[in-house]
Image (spheres, rainbow, N blue to C red):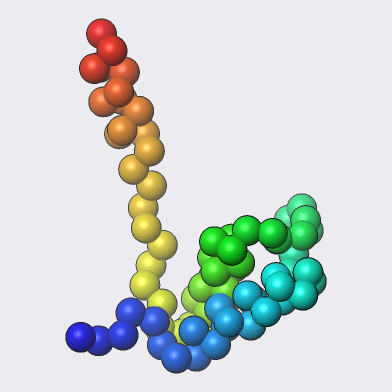
Length: 75
């Protein structure tokens, strides 16, 4: 089975994780310190994507459809 992410993309994620652990990783516009492991991974993948490395596209949001279904079920 083929790799989902390139090795260079994994290195970007690893670098972001190390920055988070050191307490120097900051998020986008607000510039707040990142504490979440998941958010650090997302930042690493986003940076890898911007550099043109092999990373799958972001998953599309399916939130609205599930909310509509929940509303219909309540009626």
